[in-house]
Image 1 (cartoon, helix red, strand yellow):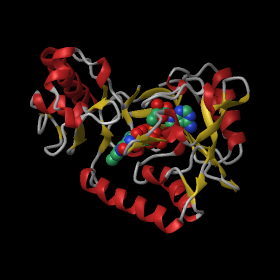
Image 2 (spheres, rainbow, N blue to C red; image 1 turned 60 degrees about the vertical axis):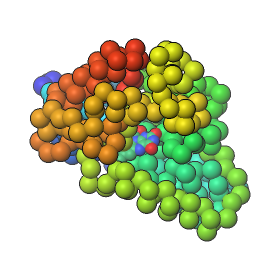
Image 3 (cartoon, rainbow, N blue to C red; image 1 turned 180 degrees about the vertical axis):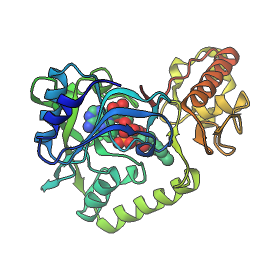
Length: 320
Ligand SMILES: Cc1cc2nc3c(=O)[nH]c(=O)nc-3n(C[C@H](O)[C@H](O)[C@H](O)COP(=O)(O)OP(=O)(O)OC[C@H]3O[C@@H](n4cnc5c(N)ncnc54)[C@H](O)[C@@H]3O)c2cc1C
């Protein structure tokens, strides 16, 4: 544990900033595992968040930002330093443009734009977590990604607030510039949408939410897909010819197929298990640890590498 008392006193002066010491992170992640953070800070105010980041950097305290914790594995030892969560969830509409604070739940944003008759985000319904987390990982489903609607992103770049045009965000499949710049914090996002019929948008979202809840029961302690799908064009030849052509969609080969071939379904390490119905879905069946989860991930990667010559890449992020 760090000696944090003077820093904590300074942080507690900031408006609407909650400060907790030795705070458990497991309840703040969907996997429900991992150890505590030395400091945990939470605020709905952008100015308090920025001031806290400045204070931590001046004190040379290591920090990390989380959103809803739906794509995170926290180490069993926890995080030495400060973990921050931004709760700002203000939504503003101006014609077909919506500006949203990064702490907004993605589902809350989808509900808002659907009701406003603004199309573009309806297929992202049911993806858990915050808008900040979604932009960080360029979240998507059913052939669409959040980046298709992003016009600009406001960030704290470690020194000042900066506006990035979408062309500066380096969005790609589950990728963005933010993965390369851990010192950047996403504050708000400007989204460009198009007119749509509210009833049809709501219906589309409701159908997808119902499909998704069969695949990912709401109580399941998981992170969605553990591994990214693979770019078909970049697969080595033996893997390409082994994969049934009908499974290739939008140029992507499903990681789940390769995992299934190496016997992933139902595999177990302690309390951590691969779903019996989906080889790319790992969950905490109860009492699982980050160590068991990482061991299972390593074992799956090894098996796929040895059998197909493919290096699976994690979609899930690590903290600690
Ligand atoms: C049941 C289930 C289904 C899922 N289905 C999908 C799916 O279909 N498609 C998909 O793409 N994902 C899916 N996911 C993964 C996850 O929901 C998304 O990646 C989501 O966007 C993560 O958001 P979060 O707020 O929970 O981020 P967190 O898990 O809290 O964090 C993820 C990363 O984002 C960073 N981050 C978060 N907020 C900020 C910020 N403000 N500034 C800078 N960095 C930030 C964190 O540092 C971390 O590295 C699923 C997860 C679950 C549990």
